[in-house]
Length: 427
Ligand SMILES: Cc1cc2nc3c(=O)[nH]c(=O)nc-3n(C[C@H](O)[C@H](O)[C@H](O)COP(=O)(O)OP(=O)(O)OC[C@H]3O[C@@H](n4cnc5c(N)ncnc54)[C@H](O)[C@@H]3O)c2cc1C
Image (tube, rainbow, N blue to C red; front, top):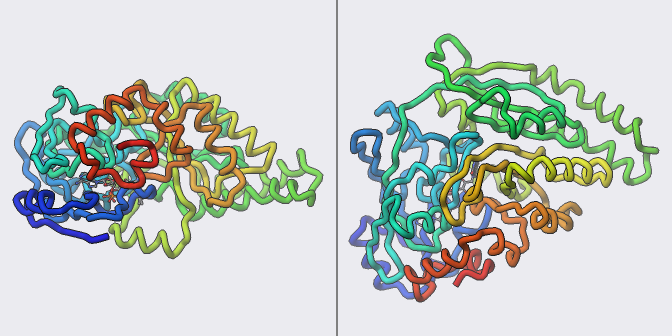
């Protein structure tokens, strides 16, 4: 594998014309799936870092811009992205190519803010696509296999502030709120501790002013909640090994072990800029990658299920965890997601619930998960580990064949096909 870092568009066009092996544009290389990996030539677009406010909320941004820098630039112009994930160390091209999203009932992934894009196709031609053009919805997201994205135009709303409420909910109460959203919150992200039967919920609404309030919230997957999730999973594991008789003894023990949770995380409200509230995870890509290696973090996958399937799936998992003592290796993340138009987007035919799980490969739950994903028609996040059997993926997308044909028209020689894409049968 070689890495090339073109200095600008002319250099990039020459590079594409002169290189024969597999080409793969990369961002910060922080995806949890191998979507950015290549055995050919890796193209780093860090030099494509221009940003320009074009007026009326339209912003031109180079593919290599780090999201944090974009958000700072937008804030200077009193603009925002409609929705963001919990961390901003990725490149904008990485975010858009994988369909990176936050948790919102009203806003889809960052792809939904793109109105125009330029890419270099497999023949070395610069192509421009605008929203509404045939093909536009086939490009976002497409994890690097349709070409090298060089620039985007985004439509950005005015910057906004949020009031965020933190509270514990019993699992069943949470499920009944998750889809119906009785409080009409705009943003929500939660973690479910299945053994404790509790959900730590963060939900947010817009406010005008944030004066005088604390805005420094903890990340959703914080260390304390992780430790308590681990503790709460132990009694059912002992019971599975025959150390306890089971039943109410286990339930009572789990209950008392997790009692301090509500003291450590009492109900609380935070107010702040949408940036501080929605993206509390800090650190550069290098910091995050070093931490991932140091902590041996379990592989994280995330998948989306329709509103119709989500309550059934969550209850199915709950039963499985309680009856069989199985569970992922960290709390489970839950976030709503709004519908969008991308052919390979997880919410192409309606809103969803995103479910994220951290699971070591040798966790026995991994043996059951691929069948569960098929049964509940779950679609993967392209930038996180894909826990599906690769052969199950195409059937999840009604426009899969159309996508493959369009992709081939942009890249007849398959120069942008890496192993990740080839495993799904994309050629
Ligand atoms: C700490 C952390 C927190 C995260 N939180 C969230 C979250 O809240 N929500 C969420 O949805 N995701 C989240 N993610 C996932 C993350 O946002 C995505 O994996 C994202 O793609 C990473 O961006 P990157 O710049 O590292 O891209 P890379 O990993 O380098 O690349 C991702 C994909 O984009 C393609 N690509 C990159 N640049 C180009 C280009 N110029 N042209 C064409 N293709 C290109 C690559 O080929 C690859 O397929 C998180 C990841 C981490 C590490």
